[in-house]
Image 1 (tube, rainbow, N blue to C red):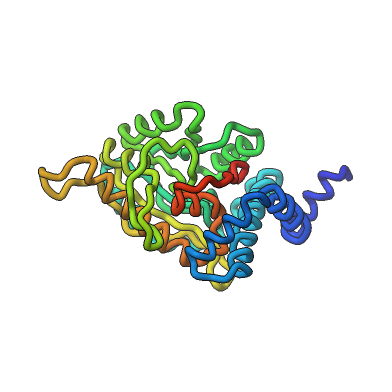
Image 2 (cartoon, helix red, strand yellow; image 1 turned 180 degrees about the vertical axis):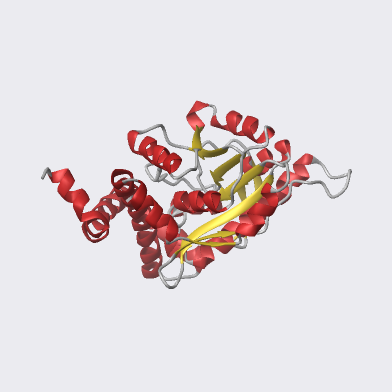
Length: 305
C-alpha cells in the first residue's frame, strides 16, 4: 500500500487527530505577525479576555483547516462519503427557501465563513428541488481538488458551477441572476471589495462591503441568508433565515437607500451568526478588518476552498 493510500485509509480519524492540529499550528505560525492585533480586537469586540480571544481565534483557524481536510478526504473517497455527510446534516427552515423558489424571482444565497458552508449549501439545494441553475461565487483560482468536489456534487444530482472573482465572476453573477438563476456567495470575505456602506456592527459604525446588496437591487433578487454551524450535540446544521427583499417601500425611496438598508440587514445577521459560537468563525481577520477599517491587518488569503 502506497503512503497516500495508507493515509486515506485512516480517513477522518487521521485527519482530525493528527493532520488538522499540525496544519492549524502551521497556519497560526504563519499568521503570528498579525496575532496581537487580532487578539486585541477580538477581545474588545466580544468583551472577553486575551486568553479567551486566543482560544476563539485558534478554534476558528482549526475549523477551517478541518473543513479543507474533510473535503480532501471526501473528494478521494467519493459519493458514498459525501452522501453520508449530507444525510447527517440537519436543515432548519428549508420551507423559506422553497417559498422563494416557488416564485419566478432570482435568488441570491448569502452565508459566511462558518461551519461547513459548502456542504450546507449542497444539502439545502438537494433538499429543495428546483430547475434553476446553481452558481457559487468563488474568490480563489481553479484547482484540481475543487474540480473533483464539483464533479462529486454533480454525481449526487446537483450541478453547481463556480463563478470566479478573477474571471469576471461579478459580471457573470449579475447575468445569471438576471436570468432568474441562483447564486451563492460569502459576505465576510474582505477581498475584491469595490463598494461599501456604513452600518452598525457590534455597536460600532463601520464600512461593510455592499456588493451583495447591490447585486440584489440591480437584479431584483431575493436574498436568502443561511448559516452553517455545529450545534451543542455535535451535529452539522444549515439554517435558513427569513429572506430579505430589495423592494422599495415607496416610489420616493432610491436604489441607494435600499442598498444601505440591505447591507445593514446583512450586518445584523452576521453579528447574530457570530454570537451562535464565535469559535466557529473561520475568518476573524475579515471580521476585525470590517470593524477597524482604518487599521492595517494581514489577510488569511489562503483560507479558501
